[in-house]
Image 1 (cartoon, rainbow, N blue to C red):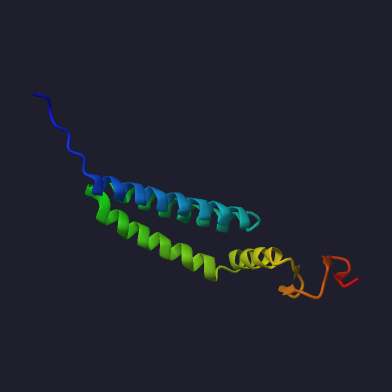
Image 2: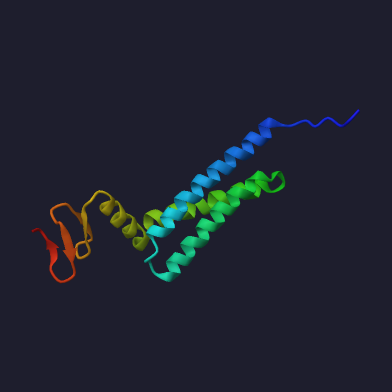
Length: 130
């Protein structure tokens, strides 16, 4: 008779779960990339490279022959990404500005803080209350 094909559903489900996680991670990193677009070019280049390495190394964990090195590379690049997200002042400020605007508040560029008592902020007048 013919050859019988055996499908390993467990391996297929693991691949689909990893692809779904990769899709979520890349979506979040694309949003993050759009937030930090106005940072200095050298920081933006390093940040983009770390994102690329992080996503690529996680995607390569699907292949069994390079899985161990892919996980090591993924964990190192994810650690660098998190450190840059939290400790690089330009990137951190862009995220604070975005969070402030999401809440409907105004970012004060002179004092570098979120203002709830202003309805608008301008370079000439500063905080405009009415």
